[in-house]
Image (cartoon, rainbow, N blue to C red; front, side):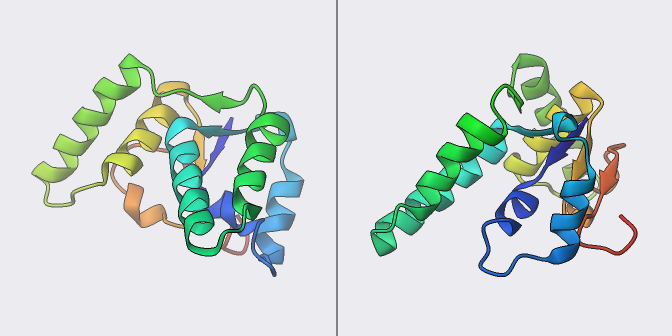
Length: 141
């Protein structure tokens, strides 16, 4: 099971996406790819901001396709155990002088709760969390 971070999802919507990322995604078993609720929040926020600024519903439509087509039935929730783990992760990182955002802590907690690997460009943001990481933006990912 691999959870795609926002930066991996967003790459596909770029006018000229990274060929490396697209190839990496295409090499994965589609049924093993998931997103999670904090990713949905980030995608929705970005789509709404873009719509308010430009009047274009391009990203709102992309979000609809993401949820109702591409990842239908493969969105992992932020449930109570993951919420508790989110607090633990934030406290642990803060104690060592490496704070983590609420959003990243939620993503990490959901991945840990499901034994999932996180595919992200921002691997450094998740250091020290005992989380399996892969960076599709790097060669050999």
